Length: 296
Image (cartoon, rainbow, N blue to C red; front, side, top):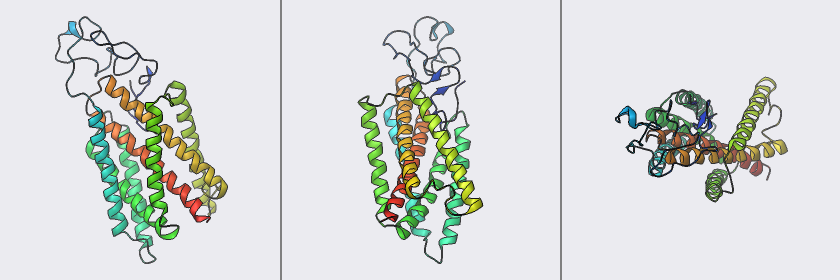
C-alpha cells in the first residue's frame, strides 16, 4: 500500500515497491508497461487499469487497455500550484497590512500568527494522511500559512531590515530555478539512495530544531544556539539545502505522475508538496538572512 503522507514519503513512496520510478523502466508505446512504479503496477494499483474494460483486457492480462482519460499533466500541476501559492501570497499581503507589528498591536498580531500556523499544521497533517487530495483542505492550509508568513515577514521587515523579505523571496525563487535546471539537466539524480539520505537528514534536522525549541522554552534565550550566531548561519544553510533536496523529490513526483498516468486529482498533491517545500525554503532563507542582516 502506498504511503499517503507527502511530507515524509513525498507521495511516491510505496511500502511495497519503494520510491516511485526508482529503477523503473519507462512505459513502452504499444506494449505492456513494466517496472516497479506504483503507477504501473497492475495488481493492487487503481491507476494501471481501465475500470470500463473487460477483465481479459486489463493490464498484464492480454491486450493493453485503452488510455485512461483525466490523467495528470504538467499544465494541471502548474495551475494547481499557482492557485495554492497565489492563496499564500494574497493572505500574506493581507495579514501584513491588517495585522501590524507595532508596539500597540504586536501581541495581538503574534497571537493570530501563531494560531494560524497551528491551524495550518493541523490542516496539512489531515491532508497528508488522507488517501486522496481535498482541494479545500489544501487551499485552507495555504490561506492560514499565508497569514503566518505575512506577520513574520512584517516583523522581520520592521525590526531587522526592510530588504530582508525581498531578499528571501528572490533567494527562494533562485533556489527553485537552480534545482529545476539541475534536475532537468540530470545534474541531480533522484534515486533510492538520494531519497533515503534526504529523509534521514530531514528527520535529524527537525529533531534538533525541536530540541532547541524545548531548551529555549524551558531555559529562555535561543536554547542550544542553533538559530543564532555562527551555528544559526550553519543550520540556516543546511535548512535551505534540505529544501532544495525536497524540491528535487517534488520534481521526481511530478515527472513520475505524468509519465505513468496518475489521475488528474494527484496534481493537487503535487501542488501541495511544492507549496510545503517552497514555504520551508522561504522560512529558512528568511531566518538565515535575518541573522546575517542583524549582524551588520
